[in-house]
Amino acid sequence: MTPARRDMVAVGASAGGVQALCALAGGLPAGYPGALLVVLHVSRAAPSALPAILSRSGPLPAQTARDGERVLAGRIYVAPSDHHLLLLGGHLRLSHGPAENCHRPAVDPLFRSVARAAGHRAIGVVLSGSRDDGAAGLAAVAARGGVTVVQDPEDALHPSMPRAAMKAVRPDHTVPAAEIGALLAAITAEPLPPDAGAGRLPAPAGLGCPSCGGLLPLDDRPLPRLVCPAGHAWSPESLLTEQSEVLDGALRTALRALQDRADLGRRMAGGHDERLHRLADDAESAAGTLRHLIARLGATTAE
Image (tube, rainbow, N blue to C red):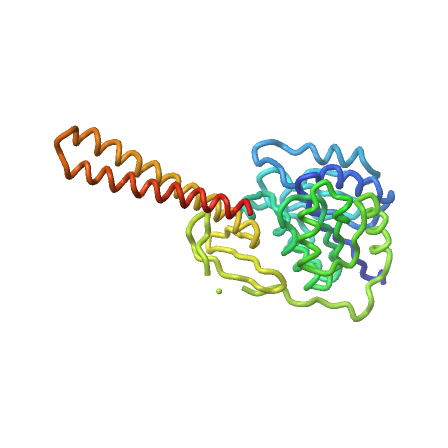
């Protein structure tokens, strides 16, 4: 009987990720017995050229993932644009579900699904990218007994994702991208210890979702992650960023409305209607307060 091995690899990348993925693919040996499922944050509108790029970069064939396809060893499966890539029972599933951290495809849904489906057979890999995408997903892989690999932040074009991942978990391996392929081969070559088992995934307390206003319950194990009833999901950093943008937009909309109210009141009042002049004065005063608040919030965000 063939011993179980860690052979299901989830890879997540964002800004600077193409270079890191090419380096990873180039370091894989021919005949690698595992499968790689890859999410690179890309535009939702444009088809991804990543499968062709990765096929040229290393010995394994890469292809765009298809819904319902059985996962085969020695293949690289790339999430198509505008779809989450998930692993369910040894098969790939594509989902048009809500964006996570403003991305579809997103790294965290892939990592969570691989953690659930593969458990201790899973390997999670976080590569170059901005913000903290992938950190919660990598923590889920670790919680289920999988191996965690992070690109050395000093080697990443955009080190935010690797650094966030390293804050979320203590990675089993932190190496440059060019060394990850050989590392994966070494990890997969080792039989799983007989006592390898799966931990628990974080189980789903509230905030308003910036996308729809729904309640955001909080998962605090192993890393805070917030999901509203509609399915919009946020890491803490992405939620703070989106909240700032939504707040700024709302305040500027209110400022325009107050300015319009003041202008309309002045025009209607002419030189005679004191009541309309007072309404216009009040609107201008409130607009001045909003301008000060917008400037203060912008300075706070910049800090």
